[in-house]
Structure formats: C-alpha cells, structure tokens
Length: 481
Image (cartoon, rainbow, N blue to C red; front, side):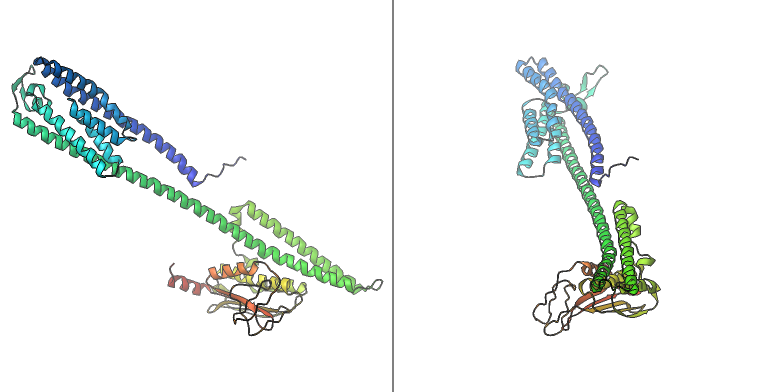
C-alpha cells in the first residue's frame, strides 16, 4: 500500500499561501484595471472641456496646451502600475504633470493614496503629500476659473435647458469655493483610503507572521514529541536490555568460575547438573534479551504503538509480584540480597510513579551486579499513601573512601568518580553508564528526590523518594506552573 509522504506544517502553509497569493494577484489586477479606467476617463474629460473653450476663443496656444493635456490624461494613469515598487516616483511625476497640464487630479490622488499606504511617514513623504495636495488644489481651481460652460464644476453648478445650453451660469466665487471644497474633500478621501490600506496591509502581514510562528511552534512541538518518544524508547531499551544482559554476564562469569574449579576426570553429577542449569539460565536470559531487542525495534518502527506500549502495565509496575520477580532473577544470577519490603495501599500510587519505582529497583540491582559483582546487596522498599514510595539500595564497592562520609549529590554512580562533599580527596572508580542519571531525571520530573554516593567505608547508597498521587496533586496545586 502506498503511503502518503509526511507533510510538515510549513509545507502545508506553503500550499495555502500559494492559493492565497493567486487570489491576491487576481484581486490586484482587478483593482488596477478599475483604477486605470477611472483615471483615464477623468483625465480625458477635463482637457476636453478646456479644449472646447480654447477653440471658442481661437486660442491656438491654449488648444495645443489642452491637446497635450488630453494625451497626458490618457497616458499618465499607466504610471499607477508601478505604485508598489516606486510610489515616491509615481507621486512626484503625476503631481508635476497635473500642475503643468489641464488634467484631472484623480491620478495624482491615487498616487498619493498609494504612497501613504506603502511608506511610513517621514519628511520626504510629507513633502510629496503636500506637493500632490497642491497639485489637486491647482487643478480644481484652474477648472473653476474657466467660464461655466467650459468648466466641469461650472457645469455642475449651472442650470441648463433641454438642449444642454447654460441658462443660468454659476458665479465665479461660488465656483472657486466649490473647487476648493472639492479639492479638500478629494485629498481627505485619498488620505483616509491610504491610511486604511496601510493598516490593512500591516494586519495581513501580522497575520502571515503569526501563521508562520504558529507553523514553527507546531513543528517544534512535533520535534519535541518525537524527541520525547525517542528518549522514552531509549530509556525502555536501557531498562530492559541492561537488566537482561547483566544477568547473562553474571551467569556467564559464574559458569566460567565453576568450569575453572573442575578437575579433569573428577566431575560429579552435581557439578554437571549445576553447569547445565547455569547454561540453561543463560540460554533463557539470552532468549529474553533477544525478545526485548525485537520489542524495541518494533517500537521504533511503530511510533503510535510505542506510545501505548511504553505506558505502565502489571509487568513494569511496582508490586509484590514484580519485586519478587526482580529479586528472584538477581538471586538466580548469584547475587546475595537482603530485603525489607513494606508495601501498603498501592492504590494511592499513580501508575506512572509505580513504574518509575519499579525501574529504580531494577536499575539499582543491575548497577550493583555490574559494578560490584559478588558483593552483598541491601534492598529496602516502602510504600504508603502518606509517604509515597521509598527505595534504598546499598552495596559495598570494594574501595575505602578517605575522611568523612561522602554524599555525591551530582549524580555519580558506582561506575563514575565519587566526589567528597567534605572537601576530601576524590576516590576514582571505573567508568559506568547513564542508567542512574536517567532514573534521576524521571524521579525529579515526577516531583521526587534521587541521591546516591559512597560513604567512607566504600559502601554505595542509592536513595529515591517518590510522592503518592495525593502528594503529587497537592504539589501541582501549590505550584501551578
């Protein structure tokens, strides 16, 4: 069956932005077309009125001037197509041409609005806005100074008959005031539209940035979830495989010792039985380790299944039965364990806490067998609703520390350097793994404490305290973070 490739939130957002950009491009083309049509129409009408007046007066220079304005009024609006890249240039050119030629100020007002929408205000922008506003006022007053029949403003204010002839022409002062008022209103509308477009553009840009940040947060959350799952699988692999492999190593060492003590030709049936039993234990433990390795591989191949499998269950949760199994495995491998088990009211313990406690005991026994083989182990486990779970494991390390008792709070194990908190010399021990460090991380994350170290007699101690469900809830309520 073909599987769809995984698509990150950023890739999804990319496809969405592509569609949105296509719609935005179509909308922009439509707006530009409407703007050009309106600007060209207005740019042609005003020079046509003036040309008619110049023709009636037989003013050749005025006719030529109005003809140039007619051409400019039809061509100038096409500069608006560059309003995004060069709004200052477009505003400057349209304002100058509007001042020099008898054309409508609509193109200049559109350029002014585009400039306000696309540039933050500064001295240069204010100067261009003032120039374009002056061009608008000049254009309106120039039209108002023409006779009523040759003026757009005069035609609107005058009375005409059915044939279109002016019956009652508007007065010159009323035309001037009307032109000035129309210019002010036009400039105000252009400024308002420009500011509105700028705010809309900023809001859309902020939305895009917010969407990008949201996509980034989703990607980081996805990566974090994957990393947490990988850490959980790595922890599970260490907890299970390390335990099984350490049992194999201990049994193999014991088998080697037994074989070394045998005398050729003088092997009793009991010795043969012990060797066969030890070999059978190694075989079973190796088979179990192989099954655990297959389970880990299956978790890596099925992340969704892994999240369910890594949860607490009866075999990996602290109970009398699970503790008995751990102790029996350790004793079968030749470990000497003295135990004190006091488990009460397991129902008050959260399942996750119970699993951490189980893994703590498992790692403590594995650590002792690995770094102090043959040494006696003391195990104490207590559990109650009031005090939570307490685990204490100790074993001699075979080395004598100098000075007062040491308590390494930095998280060193049997197989790492032990530091004296009383300022004494360091006691070097062989290098070890990260099992106890992983236990400490889980214990601290659950609200418990985890300390270990070696005292002056060379005895290693591991102490873990885990809260009950009630204590954990009270702690979360006291610290809402």
